[in-house]
Image (cartoon, rainbow, N blue to C red; front, top):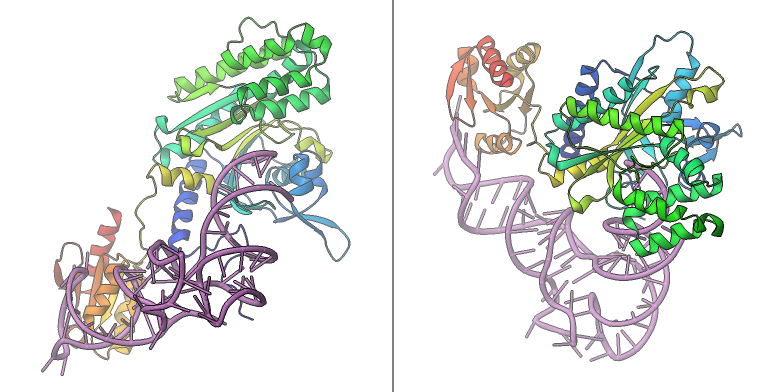
Length: 435
RNA sequence: GUGCCUGUAGCAUAGCUGGCCUAAUGCGUCGGGUUGUGGUUCCGAAGAUCGCGAGUUCGAAUCUCGUCAGGCACCCCA
């Protein structure tokens, strides 16, 4: 029986050309996160089942995790998301950490799903979290980071939209304004989440089915539908907590606009699947109709750290998946030209492999990345390889150079060619690298 | 988990109303065009049990069924 060369369903091999794209995306993420003072952490890929059962969505834990019993009979899960892990870590050092805490990580996550565009079984996800700030400044900052990454990747404001909502607002709306019980409210959130994908007439029917005849008589379902349509919530008589949540959303939008983020809107249909969100939630959408799903999102989850038996810490964060992000970059032509790591491709002429070593290791010692062509093929073929790999400089090493102690450096793009000593070669290549 | 679509060299495709198929073309890979320098071009080579299994037939890449794999949508979500 022959072995399959395919990677496991829904998981990817990263050949160098793929890895390069990933390195680029992760590099931008790290740069921006660190520019805001976020520190990188990591955690095990395997976690005890319980930390997910509490607050991740039932469907994900019940049907979409890789879970099994270890040899000691412990129920474990390959993490489907990072938030419970980071909450566990913060709770573990609740007392000794200095707040506010700014942490980020780029973990790989697994979910047992049927793969399709924008969704695989294994993906990587940047997680950026800010612990210990109660005020709106936290929301503001976390969105600046998210937007900063998009900007650093070359996205312009017309390419994506940041949509904001508040769980607190929606909960209050459903409980006090629409007078729904918990089961009704839960059903309705799911429904609203899917609103844009559902046929409107059907949506109206489904909403109607949730309300009791009594509630229907009061016109509550109609009130909801018109609210979802207009997004004009000014006349709604909300209770204190909800109207505060609504005010916060408006204030946040103002602050973001002042910071130059103008592509941000209030959208009451943004719900987010996880159960742990407590207040502001947001999702970033690709404006390209081809990708009508949300690219990434996050929100405030003030209660999660407290689940580990310590005093709660107010927290806000977001997760940005590599698969959807890469789709976005590809569709908008934002993937940069691949860049080789090789600075110099050493072309050996004649049987000089041994005697060329000195020069090559000197260059490497000076911080130059040198690839040696040891195939013994003729120079013409060696140059072709360098061209194919998009290396800028070729260094010829032959009898003549070895006798001279100086080597022929050729810039493959300009065609310039001259002999220099090792020091000079290193400085020329370094100058080039800077540009 | 449900529905729809697709499987031909490493990749992209042609062939698919059954026989001129001993499966073609392009890209890629390797070698060569007299031995120290360019992507073009020219010549040549390697590389495919036509996803797998069964059936129909004198004859199957081509038709039928099964199976596996992949893609897309739903669900859910990044």
